Length: 388
Image (cartoon, rainbow, N blue to C red; front, top):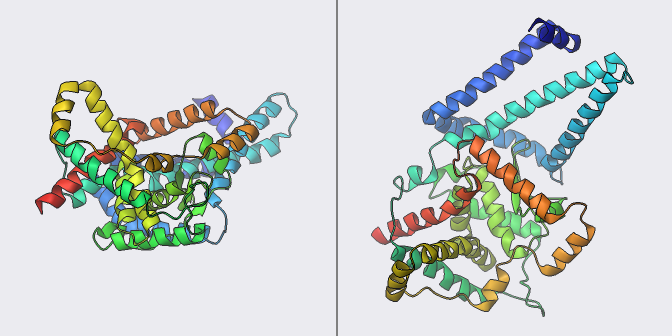
């Protein structure tokens, strides 16, 4: 213990150690309190978090590019630099004072990351959920017939809207520029705030990501950056993914950090838009989840599924809808794979593992599978709509 303290003082003054420890302990205790108190987190989300969104979001908005994306790049370089510096120090190829300055900076950066994640991410995971706040609590059990009914509603809208899209000669959907979609997403979210008050307030403009090819390889549509309060999106994925992704990431900036809730909020925002492209994107964003649930039900209980399907036949999607419901067009995949430094399989697996781990660390027990829980929210929403 004494030896550890002695080595620590080689890099930090006693005053720095005390300040550093005090901040680290305070952040740790705040995380513990967040796990224990939903009331604390709710108050934080309502009264404090919007102030941070305004302050940090307006600052990052001064930059025309994704500030958070380059922060992550800088962080990776910093970690590599720390490894190199440690090796050089061991072989005595770097001046001790230079190493001292670097590791002091590195340590304070790590602490800053921990504090930012605490305030802009961890605290959000333990607040009252969207269903509890606005839909009367947990939805309970739903019959297979109800699942098919909601699936059919969404499928019918997908089929209808697919015929209303303006397309080029190859069948690709034509829509406005990114700037127009970014603004429409903000309009949609503000409109939804009239029904769900937590969604009221100021929104930063979403930004396309420079490393969108890498995002494609990780099968990521967008990202909420807690370090810069930005809603960023993959600019290479097929255009029909963009409206729903924009609204999804903006939902995180109103304190709804759970992925299934952001999916659901995005769905509501898009389908209530006056823009048919947004409407179509909203319905497409959930149709796969609904279809997967029906496939799972058919596999697990074939007889029960046949009985339910005899009462309410599942609607088949038009071939055009299936073509539109794609993450990345083949020509883009060909270009990405030709230029890629790492294989898509490797990056996808790494991304899935990291996302799953982070979600579980924040109390989401089913990790990445939680995205699928948007189906439960859809069933609860439409059950409530029919009851009213």
